Image 1 (cartoon, rainbow, N blue to C red):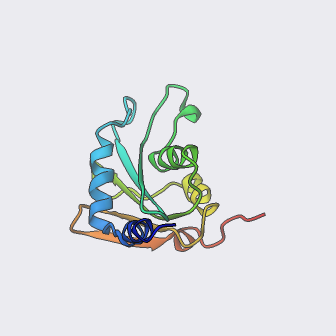
Image 2 (cartoon, one colour):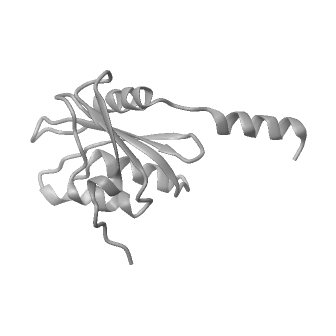
Length: 141
């Protein structure tokens, strides 16, 4: 690898996104949610180990089990693009904080028990927990 390529790689590795920026990305994504039944729109922004961000939204369906939460929607996009290691996920709804449901907690736990989960009433009142704190006895094979 050339010295210039090494510098570019190092610069990309040091790019940091703040919790507030990740939350704002989730908030922007929430406007694309499909929630005709509950009216509860949720957005998620998932940060990969490499610094890429994938968004997801909740998608409801009249056959309720067929819907998907914003968190799993974001993971599906990232996993489909080939990513498997993640640093953090921010979750936002139009009506305050939105913490992952039990299914999403177990789903996220699969990809690392130290994943940071960020949510709050708004971008100035954020809380952060590791997924192992939200799901202290997550299932592992």
